[in-house]
Length: 406
Image (cartoon, rainbow, N blue to C red):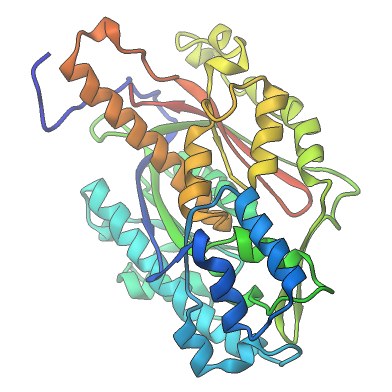
C-alpha cells in the first residue's frame, strides 16, 4: 500500500455509546532512573543501614520499573529537610506541595488531551477530577477548572482517595455522564504525587521501601463523549462494573498522620485479585446488548486470549497473577501494562491511561505497517477487551471496551 503520513483506519462507532475521544498525560521534571535510586534515596534521607539498602536494591530489580517521574527532588529536600526527618509533623507542608503539583500537572495533561482532540476546552461541558494526593477545599476540581479557563457553569464531579482504581472509576463516571447528557463532552483528569507518603527508610515500616521502589507521580486526561462518527474515537465504553471483596478492607490502606499519609499493602492482594478477576470479567460480558449483536456477543465468549487487556499495573505480582489466571501469554497480551510499569512505575489513578495510550501507539505502529505491506500480512488488533484496575476495598473497577482502532 502507498505510504501516508495520516493513516486513518477506524471501526464504525456504535450509536449512543460513550467513547474515549482523546488522551493526554503530564509529568513532573524530576526523572528517577531505577539503577541510581538506592544511593540517591539513602543519601537524601541520611540513612546508612546496610540491610535496608540491600532490601531496596532487591526490590528495585523485582518491580521491573526502569524509570519514574517524581515531584520530590534533592532541591526540595534541601529546602524542606523536615520531609526526610523521622517523626516530623509535616502533613501540612506535604499537602501544600502536593496540591500545587497536582493542579499544574493535571492542567498540562488536559491541554495535551485537548490538542489531540482538536477542539477547544471551551467545548467541555463536564469535568471529572480524580486524586488521592490532596485534601483541601475548594478542591482540585475547581482549581483545575479555573486554571483551564473552563466555563463557570461546567459541571464538576470530584473523586478523592480511590487509590489505584480511581482512574477507571473516573472513566465509569465520565461514561455515565456522556451517555445521559446528549451532546456533552466530559473532561476526565487524574493527578497524583508521592510527596504525601515519602518517608525515610525504617525497619519498622518495610512497606515504605516497596513504595520507594514502585510508585511514581504524574497526571493524565481523557475526553469522553458519544461519537456520532464525525470525530475519531479510540475506545468505546460498553459496560462498567464495580465490586468490592468483603473482609479485605484492611489490605490496602492509607491513613492520614501528622507526618503525611501512611500507606500499607497486604501481601495477599495479588492472590485475591487473581482468584476473583475471571468471575468479575465474566459478569461484564453481559453488557453486550442486542444492538451490538453484529459486533458479536459470540465473539465475546471466545477465549480470553482473543481480547485485549488494559490492566492497571499495580505491581509485577498482580500482572503476573492476572496473566496466569486468565491464561494469557506472559508479557504479550498485557504488554501495554508492562510497558507502563517499566516507564512510569505505579502512578496510581493515572497509570491506566498510560496503558491505554501505549495501546493506541501499538495500533498506530500496526497501521503504519499496513501501509507498507499487503493487508493480509498484518494481524488486526483485538476489537473487544477489558479496562481493569484494583484499589482499596479491595475494589475491582472494570469496563468492557471496544477498540475502534484497527
